[in-house]
Image 1 (cartoon, rainbow, N blue to C red):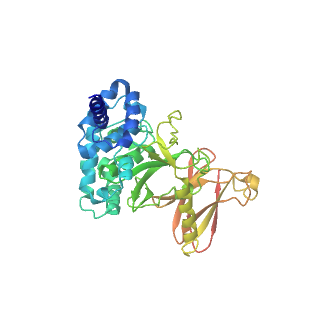
Image 2 (cartoon, rainbow, N blue to C red):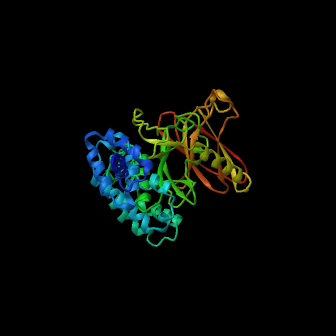
Image 3 (tube, rainbow, N blue to C red):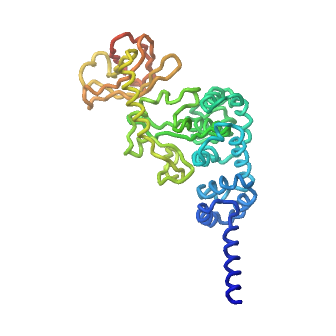
Length: 397
């Protein structure tokens, strides 16, 4: 009789343990225990989200709760999480490229409701409707990426503007103002991609290699790898104005490396220049991919016969333009029409005379170089490249 009693108790304990998070894979159980403990009074909302999520969506809910930052554990309610999951899984079921995604990519780069530290908003139902119409006839993920990228600006009517309220705006904050920083634009584009089942994340650097400041952009996943793109570069993958700068990033320098955001903890935080104390935004250091791409790009264009170097130096004035000590370090950008081809910082008086800012540009085209002059204002010069390398001297006065 005693043995039967022990058996009954054991079976009850196993049943209770098995039903603790019904329908949730066991690998999440300890993580959920920890998350719910940190949630405090909000744990009831998270438990309700787990309990209510349909069977096919329970792992996604467990993933979000297990890995979300503490600020979200203590504030997000069940309704918010359930609507996010519902539309994410709806997109996965509807679009063939989303259905074919590995679970790890879907969970970390489609399902999340947030990219960085922006305000938490239920953007997914609105964006599912907005961008679903553009990808409806797309045959594969590349067509879908191009369709979203091509239409997003006209759909949301948001442009880059330094007068935006803050750098880390959420989608609806940017849409309300019709303006955003590069970070706000990247969040908008990332959420638009995710809304239609395209894996996406925000990438960026706290400071370019030549210390011209920070920049953020968007990455998308296709054909088993990550590509970079931008809000104003429809359909162009691994091609943007900052490519040359990204290709010179410094992996070992936290300030000058390149990072890609992650929902799941990585042991690395995404550096946020607007609030350096925030460390809960997870990231991967992806510098190697950008530097390797750029090296391959340089090797390719040096052999195609269609590009020549444009070497740019800046000097105090036209009377002092021959010696190293006459040189001035200034920021500049290079455009072909309205398309930015690159940017950088000229070498100053203490650098080697052979250290010259160089751009590999297509022959037989006219370029505009916009630079910061001695007064702090902007100056522009145009240069037409022919068949030979060309040197361009800029003057502060």
